[in-house]
Image 1 (cartoon, rainbow, N blue to C red):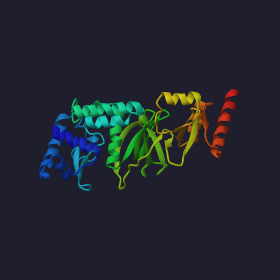
Image 2: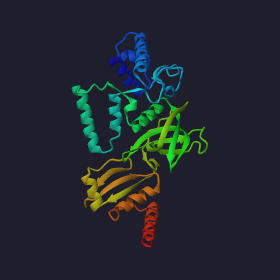
Image 3: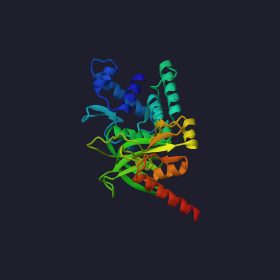
Image 4: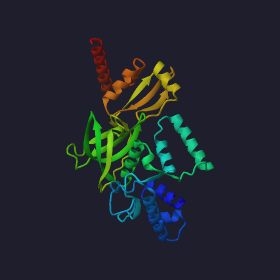
Length: 316
């Protein structure tokens, strides 16, 4: 059993060669590796009630774990494998914790579990028992690993649309997961355009076509889109706003990062944004305790919009 689970743990990280698995198991040849994988596929078929649902498989002529002759490596032949190891699940849960303080606690717990063997992290769980959100996270992570475009059903404004996309990155902001993608050439409109999809709005994920290019891109963002180095401003927080972030240990989010504390107790933060409305929302939330630190055309533009919002509010 342990051999099977070690193979699964490695496959969730990346496609793995016969030679690499032979080194892991301290073998002199790869024949035994082939037997191990064959046994694992048979185990999956015997144990899983879901295996009869062949629509889960990308290539119906292959088993759930297949040898990719192009890569010369083993990989999953599905975006949602029947089983996931506890080690893999722990690493996915670790990524989901946005609060810096709690994230350190989780790392401490994870270290304690591994060092003291209180949990066999190679034990496996059936993926169908996990939350729908975690199932979607697994599917997207594996599509990025094997570079597959996706056909998704996306629900927005009480309607559902079919979209063909190239996934590029999965990230979370304020506890919500988002998929950054570009529209595939098979999409009806907006081919090549960038989009950010909330995983809560995705109701179905199916492997579409193998991409000839590496799809993964390391990015950060939120519901408004992704961030780049050019789009950021410095914001000064004082009194109530400053005290809030000091009290909370200053959360390091995708949008906000600590810069420095000033002599009067104010703090200076860097705010990344992809849409100017994000700046307006943040300043309005904390005004008069939040101000844009440097004079610029953008500062004047933001303050003018906030002023118009206040005037509109007063005449209603």
